[in-house]
Image (cartoon, rainbow, N blue to C red):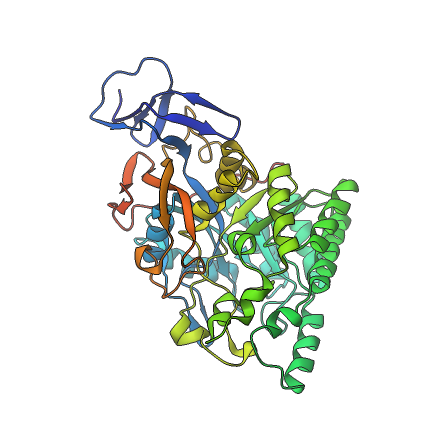
Length: 456
């Protein structure tokens, strides 16, 4: 009956913890607890947590923009994800101007197919809306793509206007999709950047000064208002500050279905990191930018009390030496790697008392799986779920260094950070792909996941 049995571990789900053995047949969990007979293979998880594999719903693998290319593709990026405890990623498929959604998706399927180690799915980024694209958009949920992405920033590149946003929200409401929004006022950011350049203020700290919290919070409030007008759900990506969080809370008080995530780097970096010498500040150019220590503490509290629902990586692996080491902040590509470090760094919130281990599972696995149509197959150690499991050692300690990581990019934001709590072994749909911290899977074993329509 069983191909794999995990014995003597402590099963940790978002809704509770129990000492139980876990029986796996093929790709599926078929028994949790009770007497479980022998199997072809058994793993002793004594002293370990048996958790659902992580779900990272915000990645940018094999991304190319004019003049830039990420170091990590779907092979190296998902190997890194797996070694960090993540078994499913949702990546952003980018529509180019003049391109149909079908053409864009064909490109992303080709990028991932035969390479991905983890299971994967796609969000679709809409940059060029017309009647044909709107028709395509309405058909995507039936194809298992149930989330759309809009940018309110990056003028003349990805930024869309309010009318486009309303059209997309209307389709989402009708077809059962979730709209993700990068909330920054692109016109305001561009204006402030032009002023800084004219004054000769080109150092990396000016990235934060030209995109202050009000740029983010105004757009956050406007995105929520537009979703409210359309009667649609909205998911605010990479929220960074108290002002934007206030807009989320205000929207919820008006009964708007608004969800918000933050990202690992906002939990550990601050605006001061942008002022690091010897070009080091360039590593920390992210959008929205890093904020204050007070904002960082607020994000931790909001994860603990449920105001924020998800921690994502927003992984985008622009190489430092080739692409980010520049003196002019306007020429540095925005974003940084973090797909492997996401769960490890977020777990430090358990060690610091910000939340318990069940809440940790909820924000790195269960909530993202539920919100993005992956549940009940993903996000829980439960009968009938995919056998996506991470064996987590709460006592293991290490220091994060570039040399220990599995990504292809040439730096980590968390260099030198002492951490406690690490993934030991990782199982994806019944196959052990990481054992004792080392990757042992086969590239191409990951599958495209068709996701169900959005349900709150």
